[in-house]
Image (tube, rainbow, N blue to C red; front, side, top):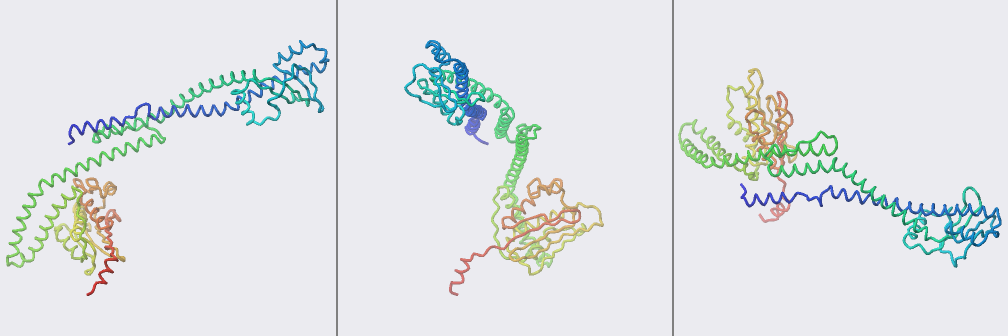
Length: 495
């Protein structure tokens, strides 16, 4: 149990995991949405002001063309200076000219400017140049003279207009201000709508999952802390259901680990007394070995081996509870003799009608730890005996067979029985402690221990087949690899 200081520190650490609003996904989403909408508005703003500049100049040129046509129909020299000035003031221009059949005619003019700063061909202005000129006019214009020319309408006659850009710059700044304000309003409105939609669809469920994970971490054994997923069919719904399944699985796993820890604690408490009792039994078996009765002489060695294994099993169960299974001490073994010892330890009742068949060849050898392989075979065999003993019909064939074969450096042992087969739940959690039991009240530790011991040998334990009347487990154990350097050194040493 953690101390109060550790608990407070843990709670403070988890409280620090609460994300503040300024760094939350919702705030980042809002700012990014505003930024991206503003960037989109800028991309729209530049062509917009360029188009406004060209339309403004076209309107002035069209007005000048209308005045020019009137002047061409009459005598321009008949107009007084005051009238010409009034016409140009109304246009905001300095001069109006017409070009027809390659010749230019000055229709009305005030004092001619010393130079023309920019020539604007309204009929042939590239978009990029139009944007550049619009930006330059808005930022640095006001003192330049523009020569604007181009056809008006469907006529081939071109009109020219000399005009200052002061009024153009003022109109362009007003237009740019209005567009900027409108863009800002649109960007904020769009950002708020997008933020509301995404926050409701994504951010809020993600925040709920985050809060559920933090609450589950505080008390993983509390079923109320498991998230309740919504009936959504999108990725968020899948994530919520997977999180709920993961939390449920983790809760079951933690319960099983606690059960296993409690088992290790219980075994550690009784282990000392159990070994004392077994030691007393070993002393009595030693005395029994000195009895001259032939039956006692034959049974005593087996009894001693059984007691030695009982002591080893007591320590082994404790080691399993502490996840400290010893590495295998591998030697070359005659498997048939080991299988005979397993048969003797099982103590099958002759009246049970169960036949044990040792089909291993007498000279078959395997590279393994004798005690650990004995435990594997005895666990598998005991499970098979218990499964077949539960069947009441007397005409059924009850047979447990052990076969073995070798392919190169790999040995395979088959443990086959004619029992009812494993139920689906046991097959689903076959090698999981407390969940892989095939019978009511079982712990499933036998298969879990056997699986761990076989893996320690670098091999595999698999269920090859399981159905009514046939269940086959396969144990595959490879030989130990040869250290070539050590072998060469041994050959080089003098005899």
